[in-house]
Amino acid sequence: MGFSPDTCFMSKKPSSNPAPASKKAATKDGLAFESLLAELDATVQKMESGQLSLEESLSCFERGMALTRQCQAILSEAEQRIEKLMQELPDAQ
Image 1 (cartoon, rainbow, N blue to C red):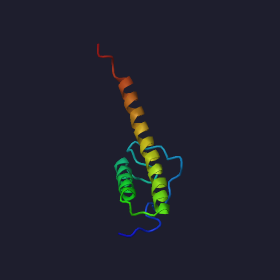
Image 2: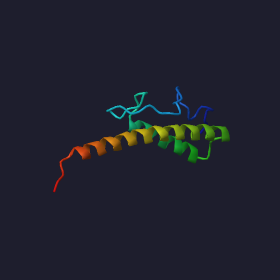
Image 3: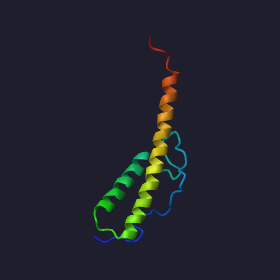
Image 4: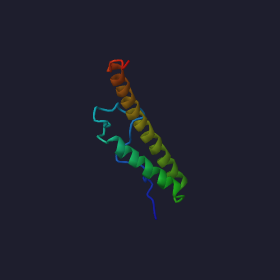
């Protein structure tokens, strides 16, 4: 199985500071959390295949780190939303 030098790069590289997620948990590029996670999983599988060159592995690692940051930002926002909702609940005593 051959890999091209841009194996792990999409057409548009993400910024180092991911955009905050919208109410629909989508990124600036319109990718849902699940899509980002699926791409991260595919990236890890490519790296674990052992068939990438060093340069391809580095590209995949960089992409994986960017995807991880985007996922973390979405999860952080979801956690904040949950905390806000929990604070709005009347005390159940």
